[in-house]
Length: 354
Length: 284
Ligand SMILES: Nc1ncnc2c1ncn2[C@@H]1O[C@H](COP(=O)(O)OP(=O)(O)O)[C@@H](O)[C@H]1O
Ligand SMILES: [Mg+2]
Image (cartoon, rainbow over the protein chains, first blue to last red):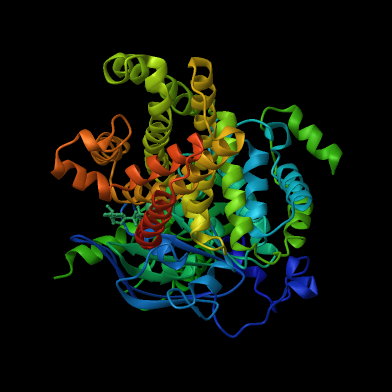
């Protein structure tokens, strides 16, 4: 099953799971806490007639990336702003590391940092000025704030732009300074609201790398995104939200298998056996099979679900049939459905509900 | 690590996050103890100064506007009201000083309205600091702009022939009283800046409040020349008390009761509009 193992979930850095080289090895950074990073129950926020967040129950474990996935207008920003103590919930409650987001807002603010969807940095000021300003506001003295600003600019590749006004930064640089500003004091929980929306692929990859490094150091990241592949790549667990409610929750793998589809990708030793293999697979799996660009490879979809059998079971039966028919398989892998398919399936299901 | 990063920089924005560099920065990110209310406010005032440095155009309204006001009213009314501009200036200048600065205070609301729409305020509001400090600091920054405007007007007045009887001390006390009042008065505009949707509406409403307050007062003429009902308004107009107090300080003829009333009205304005502003700010 190499297909599954090549997607290592990013939750590998939970404290205690002993991921070697993870930053949590630095003893003092580990805070063993019984409370999850975030816990909400029945959280609601209404704007006029819009129920922007309509009863969200969520539990976010510590020291991992948790993805909030949903289309534009789903309520992601509103949800995050409530958790960051910027908005007061209209109903329900939430805690951050066990502290109430309304009653203990001041304590919550000491542990969280927010990188908003729209640049939460002062465009008129330079990179250095922004970071020094925030460093001072966090309580650093003048010289410490300056030194910290220099270190952050260096680590984010912004040293050359340090004395330029942020309004002259490129989109990717803005995102980086915005994230840098969020970790002047390393937060226990970092909110990243659509950190890559509008970025070119290269800048997007830079942000992804940054997020991975941050979470490796033991910070919990709550990331919202409209991009299915982003949640898939970064998040250990995902909540899919639509119209202010959670419509699915789980690991990327669980979400995909809940839809029950997948595919098996097969590489044959002899290309001339491809047509025969196609017939075998189609008969066994009862689904469409198509030839890959590679002349010895083909891919078959697996319709899971009804029979109660997993995709793996279907696939292994199909492979056994190929062997019985004397077709030599050099390599195979089991692919999971894309989150795109998952999302469509989930929202369709919801809309057809009475 | 310096060598890797300089190599990266050779390529235009070919930045690659390096786990070691970033990890080291994260590991040393111990949060310090949070700053005092005063220190946070001063930091926000410093932000206002930085904004002036980068957007110096915003000094236009504290320099050009007072100059125009002073020249305009001195020569417009001087001949008719006091026989000559020089004579009238002795009466008018303290009034124009107060009026110009009072008018400029409305930019506090306009500026805040524009500023607060931006995402950076989200960040400020998630910091573990005394919440009003962002606004207190902005207003302190504005008070610096008001002092600049005051200096511009006094210098222009001296050039035009104004002779303050209170001397240097009188001038300093007069400006001091004006700044204290303006600090309190600004909170009306911070509230408006938070309540109203656009900069334009803040401007409109501010002007609607400011024009009657500054014209229906003792800025231009002695209220004893006004009909009685109007005198009644002038008597409760805080701007009128402020003008009398500042005029007294500048001329060396101290007006104790006006000064007292000025402090009382400043206190009342601050006590009403400060908390209202903060309530609004917390909910935004
Ligand atoms: N301040 C607001 N006033 C009125 N409606 C709002 C406000 N903020 C968000 N909404 C509405 O709430 C819904 C959810 O918005 P939002 O949380 O921004 O979604 P997302 O971040 O997922 O795109 C949208 O319909 C949006 O129009
Ligand atoms: Mg959003």
